Every structure is written in C-alpha cells, then in structure tokens.
Length: 222
Image 1: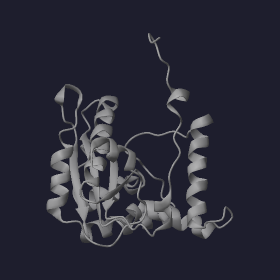
Image 2 (image 1 turned 90 degrees about the horizontal axis):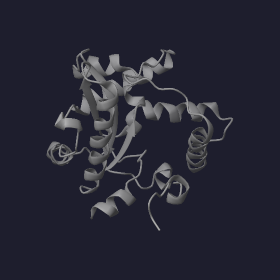
Image 3 (image 1 turned 30 degrees about the vertical axis):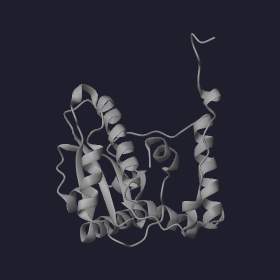
Image 4 (image 1 turned 135 degrees about the vertical axis):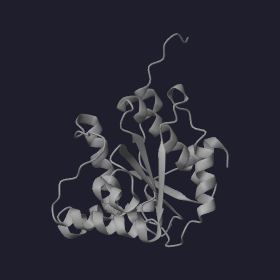
C-alpha cells in the first residue's frame, strides 16, 4: 500500500474485533509515526498505550462519570461549530444514525451510541497523546495533529483501523488514575486502534469531502 492509497483508504473505525493487538505491532506503528515533523524538531508528544484491564478500567470510569452527569473537562478548550462547519457535523451524524438504525427520537439508542465514544468504540487498545503543560498550546496542537495522522496511516500497513477522538479523554482524571499520567502533562487526543469489524454498520460510512475547487484559491497560475 503506497502513501496515496493509505490516505484515501483511511477512515474512522467505530466497531472492532475483540482480538488483541500485539505490543510489537503497536511498537512498530509508533516507531514509524515518530518520524512525523514537528516545529523546531521539538517532538512534544508523549505517548501512552493502553490495553487489557487498564483500558477496561478507563472505559468503565468514563461511563460512570457520564452516567452521573459529571461535566467533561477536555484538556484542550473547544467551542461549538457554527454555519457550514456545524452542517457538516450534522450531516455526518445523520449518516451514522441511518447506518446504525438509530431514530432521531430514540433517546436510549442515542445515549448508547454516545457511550461507545467514551468506551473508545470498544477497541482493544488505545493510544493517548499528551504534551508537557509548559509548552505552547497552539504550536504543540499542530505537532500532535501531525503524529496523530501518521499513526493512523501507519496502522493501515498492519491491517489495523483507528478512530481519532476526544470522548475517551474527556474525563482526564479517570485517564490519569489508571495510567499514571501526571497533572504536569496536558492530555490532548486519543486514538482507538484495533482490527476492524467490517460487519459493524458504522464502518460502512464514507464521509463526504468538499471538492478541491470549492475550498482552494489558485494564485499565479494561467
């Protein structure tokens, strides 16, 4: 698989087989991904890989916090989307709910779907990326985005699927409790990783992309 094929084939996987991912496979993925560029070669990423009982503890902790109505506390500030950006989010949700057979008025199924995100979509492993809190947030977020994409592309070489998300780390106190990530580190993003279950309906999703012409301004060309 070449780089172009990997970019075109990568998609968010929201249903996984229970098969564990060998540690050596994950190590090879990360060894490749750490070749990602970073500003001034700072390489700000700190990587925590969780599986087995530790991951199950985080999943349970997240769901318990969600069930009791605890306010999520993401490590990176976010704000709601608006305009065309919000519409793209809505369109994606409509596609997913149609594939999963979740009716708009079915609150129980919608709640269960939300829980899946806080359970890392039941993946057998997850990669959690952190940075030192002393580092500039805007610069390190760009660097974290670079290594995140590279991890997802490298994973394809091993038949693995991934899903980038913040739900699994929206209760950082839960993540810290079971991983030992200290308060001095800012938990920024998580990647669910495992072998895709291609029979899972949501994995059939092909999310839409805007055309290049609609988002590109060409300057200096004939």
